[in-house]
Image (tube, rainbow, N blue to C red; front, side, top):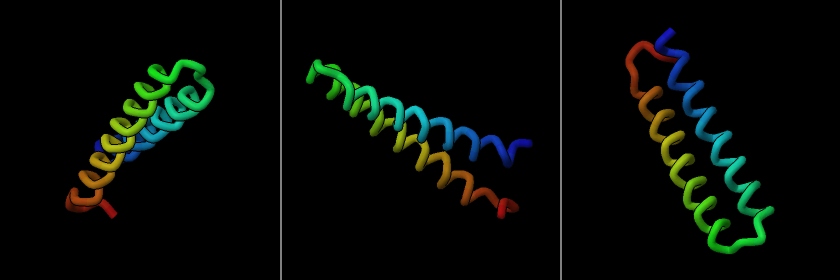
Length: 61
């Protein structure tokens, strides 16, 4: 199952980013909201990197 795992990982990080953005929008503390948005950006970058790695893997289609 190694072909399926990177896709699941990218979905996991996309969900983490969504949750972090939702919490940032709901937060009254501007500093906490900023940190949560920064975390969301990191999670989105990780998800994109994993998707890129998965698409470059030979034999995956």
